[in-house]
Length: 151
Image (cartoon, rainbow, N blue to C red; front, side, top):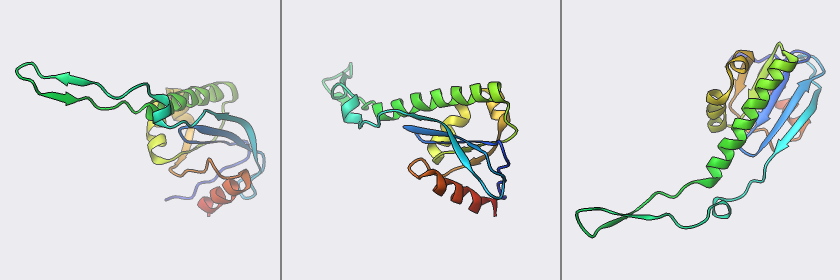
């Protein structure tokens, strides 16, 4: 993987399906000083708490056999809805602030969903993607990990 440089005034979006940190580097590429611009969260409830009932059953017309329908993964749907909102927020950041450098940090599955959900202007503004989950880390640890990737 090529080194990732994050210069001054770069925006870093660290997110997963339930939490997003929108950060800006107020330091320089070698001595980062990430400032939290915004924190967005949603309740991370379990699927059983989000759903309403067991999956239904379907009758096959030519006989008496019945088959179960697949259960809806409400947790995954809630995460996708959250990530769609984050993608829209990234698009607004690009329109309002026109960042020179923007780095997207998310677990692989969330990163894949975000790639498809980002507006065209935001896709062009993303200069690096990191497939890691840093959302539960304090900001100094995020800085340290991003500096390791720059080395």
